[in-house]
Length: 108
Image (cartoon, rainbow, N blue to C red; front, side, top):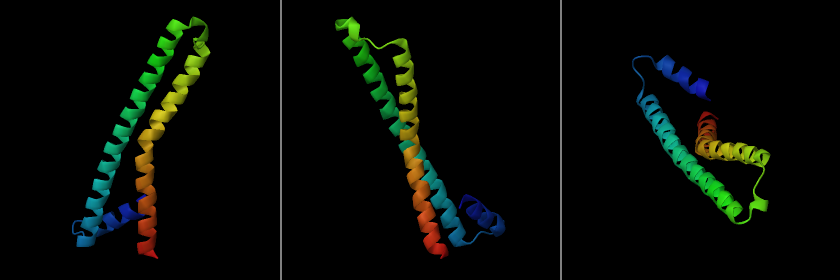
């Protein structure tokens, strides 16, 4: 779909049609909105990770025998990283899927 859109813009050259201009504007607005939504989602997931780590450390201060091992911290860190990235990419994935459906309807 991306290649198809870009080829269409390239074929229009210096004089794109009104439809091409609208599509280009829509594409830019969608990408901007998805990037902003993704950054907010990643920020929220990052704060959840900080809270979980803080809570885990504070719980261990009261019950040292329940403190996670260093290996557990590594696993939690990797899972947190995946959760943060997934949260950031979810709006982009939704936008891409919606565009694919919309462009397929218009094409066929």
